[in-house]
Length: 480
Image 1 (tube, rainbow, N blue to C red):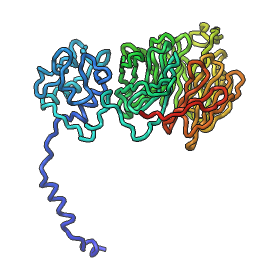
Image 2: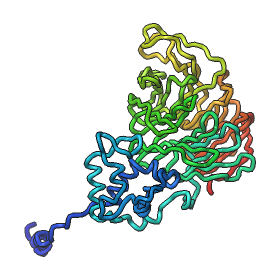
Image 3: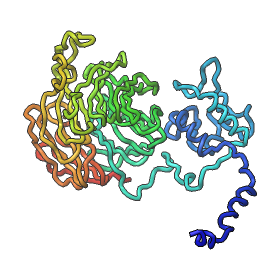
Image 4: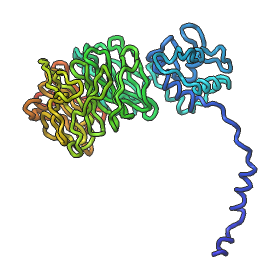
């Protein structure tokens, strides 16, 4: 055995030792724009300084733009010159405040020092060539080699537009011609969820770049302009919904939180963190005082909006009561509002407006619940549950009520197949099953007149079906 070992040339063992000792120590590297400065600006600054919303006329989404000037004529970054680099004045903390990020937390001393060092070193651009060629904005809209997976669709209040998620953008279709009307190109690579404001004048999107940031976009529908962009968390956000008075939008995150954002200012107004897994759906009560959320942790939870206080688990918390995570939620429109009877041992037991919530998820079974508990909690109960509906194929990813609250549509998927169906809320019967669904379905929406539903999913096709009988009316691929 020793002979076999010695037969190997000695230089194979000895040479690396000498080579390692002879190599000079690596030269200290300067601050990297691409790896350090760009992510920092992306997280804290680009919500207000991007092509779709250039606050003060200044854009911060590329190295070249950073060297440009704002409306005031001042240069944002001047390589090697700290005094002339206006960005430093804006992000410098003075008396515990900084001009920028607006309405946000100031950069830490270490982050400020990083930007300062980068400018002092010459503000060099080390962006890889491949990344330079992938800049996407309104002037350089994304090019599609294949249709994007559609994760959300939404009709405007007047029924004239259908919003569809795309890659790096929201596609607006004219519902008379079904032709593309506008492309709303934003900062985020992925747009996960869409919702028009109650009056239809604004369009909100839950979006983000995986592993980098989450973003809440608010668009002015008439002007096709971005009103606000709020960057939150370090991953995409989901399940956006509007408060009834449009004073807040809510989203869920992969950081297990529910957040409420002021749509005008982008300021965070609410945060609840009692879920133990990703939060993927939200829905406000009709009076806007409560917010329900569903999560992969198999629960639907209730938050009191004014206090940000977690109130209750709407669903049963008994192991085995639910099979798999919840992915979909919608609040039932109810024209006649009554008061729920709240048990006296419940915190803040005053009478509350009666609301009903529909949820569904991995087990493919839609369930209707009371938003507020009316009986004393018992171990193992599921007392808020009103009705269980017929199971669908695979997992349900979206449920939506019609405007009257008499029907709901749901979509599901399993093993490359999808199902789109309409249910009667009160009888529990499946009244229509959509035809010609070619693949997994992930989202659904009701037209303004309630006569049709739009759905879409994995293959990028958008289907328009008759809500009464499931007949296919129109099909097109969401691809510019």
